Amino acid sequence: MKVGRNQIVTLEQFILDQERDFPYATGQLSKIIRDIVLACRIINREVNKAGLVDILGLTGDVNVQGEEVQKLDIFAHEQLVDALFKGGMVCVVGSEEQEDFLFNEGCEGKYIVLMDPLDGSSNIDVNVSIGTIFSIYRRRDYDADEVLKTDLLQRGSEQIAAGYVLYGSSTMLVYTTGNGVNGFTLDPSIGEFLLSHRNIRFPEQCHTYSVNEGHYRTFFEGTKQYLRHIKRDAKEPYSSRYIGSLVADFHRNLLKGGIFMYPGTTEKPEGKLRLTFEANSMAFIAEQAGGAASDGRKRILDILPKHLHQRTPLFVGNKEEVRKLEWYIKKYGNRAKYMADLKEDKAPPLANNSK
Ligand code: AHM
Ligand code: MG
Image 1 (tube, protein in one colour):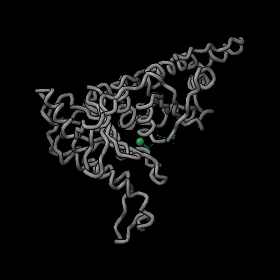
Image 2 (cartoon, protein in one colour; image 1 turned 60 degrees about the vertical axis):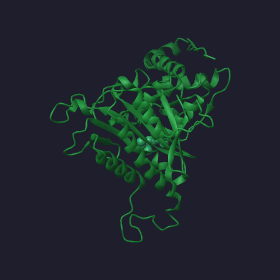
Image 3 (cartoon, helix red, strand yellow; image 1 turned 45 degrees about the vertical axis):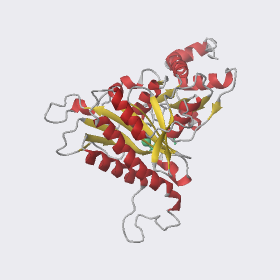
Image 4 (tube, protein in one colour; image 1 turned 90 degrees about the vertical axis):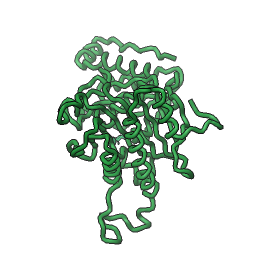
């Protein structure tokens, strides 16, 4: 729900109010969110300057002072790790930019952050929206002397907070601590995030689908049938909207209604997106906003990751739409049966559009 005039609430005020509602809150989680936000403001500043890089002569790997110029995704990674480790609450960070977990030596903090510091970074060069994605977990056994393997790879359902920052036409933070989803827009004139979208819910209606349809011929039959269905049978046509930046695609669908799909393909059965850094955060936010997230067969948040960079197909958005997609995958997932049905000239049944 959009916040009206005369209701200015800063992120800081919002966090304080939330803490007041939970008398046993220690403030540690709030501190982590503040640390992430601080890093994202610095990232935002650099993202906004990205188009000037050529003019200012910082295109190569070396700048005019002979210093190495960092790529923005590495810069974002370093800002976030720095802010989180200095903050003292986070003992481990897993980042899409690093092969393995990073440990904050000597830190007694009980939190673990998994993140994609700059998602969609191939869009930077063309001035298209990109984002930072994060998930926060608590160590399972923080009395243990050291961080255990079971602390590191937890199901998405164990997240205690998740969010993203969208560097778009304006900069927005959207996050949840498991008590609804709220959105804050950065007011650059005062450098503050202001509450702009309180208690965000997916709209009832879903008229948009987002998928890289250029890969259609490599999609599995269930995904193809679902796409055929929404294009052929929907009473009102769906719009296709695909930016190629997960945060931006997800955000639009969250506010306007829609389903985002990055399916498995015959070439990459596990899809492209990472369960740990991308899918879990979006799944947590989606569920908190009344939506759903699935790998086509099961709930994303129920998958136990086996390794840090694990990939998963991702279908996330309006709940009914995700369920419909699952129905098609279940129905046509078994290709042999599907081919046999076709041979017998049984026309594939059409699911009713829910509208
Ligand atoms: P990245 O983590 O390397 O930036 O890749 C993730 C991005 C997502 O933001 C987006 O949904 C997807 O890749 C787009 O992939 P494609 O270009 O194959 O459609
Ligand atoms: Mg990414």
